[in-house]
Image (cartoon, rainbow, N blue to C red; front, top):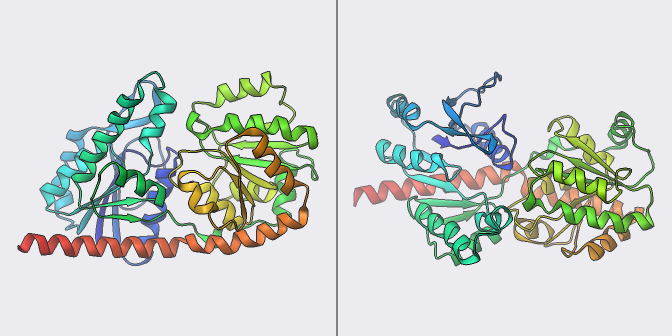
Length: 392
């Protein structure tokens, strides 16, 4: 198959959506399919991957990390795209990419599939809390219904996200296909643990919690800090590593200062995903995750593959990972209860080792190979159904 993907975001903009696109794209090409990608041009000089078209884009006020593709620039290459004879168009994001993607699908006579990565209704509550609840719901649900009705199929990363869309009244053919992980790329061993702790001047024996991901209001990192204050009473030398960056970082830094947690929290910024982040998994004793809006949570799967036990709030996509209880523990979105769950594991090295072994086995359920195969089959079904419909 020859697939055309379009997205409003991709590397060097680091995000779960970018990671998902790269994972599926590379996996599909390993199976022999051809996948081209239309994305914004971020204006940075990066070594480009084959098959990527960077479209001239403009910056967005108040959102310096984001770019909006210029429609005219994309439409100027439409004839080049037509000559490549694609079988299907996959829309990855709901902004400019959605409307340009649908236009291209009609022009090129292609079936279109859309991925619904983000729980927008919950995000609006975090960023625009002053807007009345009924209006926030309408702002998320009406465009979602319109966009989902405009495509031939939907992909969601978790069962919880599928149920949200079904409750919106959306009846477009939907498949739950989480982003897979490359199991062989995840390692967690004593050498990596020691090296990472030495490099960042961490005590080799202190208990270490790890959060990895974007620092934003919807990630609920404030709960983790509140929980840490409770844990510090039992483990005075405990350390929380915050890996990542985002709009909430300065607020979190101020909260750490005001809560007198500066000796117990380290902000490490972004770490290289291939080299340093696996070492961070090795250096930690637990991954802690409190988001209640995550549609999947790639960091949870990466932690599992690395054998790092997880304590997380069982909401949305995280619930799929936590459901079996293997390698993980569920905790309420309440600081004291979350702290008690972490304390139980930190106090029992044998239990942590058991969870570590379980985690590696559980991670096999989300292997990249398995998820890509499911996606490819959905592509084939959609292409076949579209051809049948056109003949009628």
